[in-house]
Image (cartoon, rainbow, N blue to C red):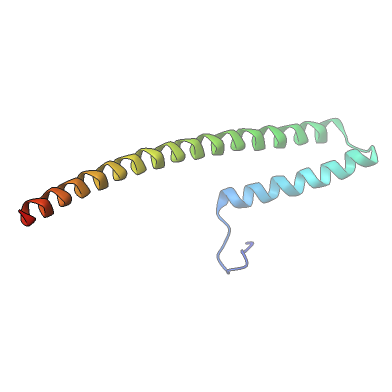
Length: 96
């Protein structure tokens, strides 16, 4: 089992990605040498498609997270403004 530099075992998705990266690297070397077979070309295409699928999924998750953070930030800003106004009104009432 491969381990990361911190000593923890790789997660299954990390292991799968490393395997795809190694396969792509080996297949690209074969392609560059002109010795890539049809089945190897199909494997290379499948690895590429999987990476594209995962990239799209990651981009969507990052977009969703960014939108959620913006909503939370707006809500927090609104609450801060409300509390500041409440505090200002309280100090004005105490000064009178």
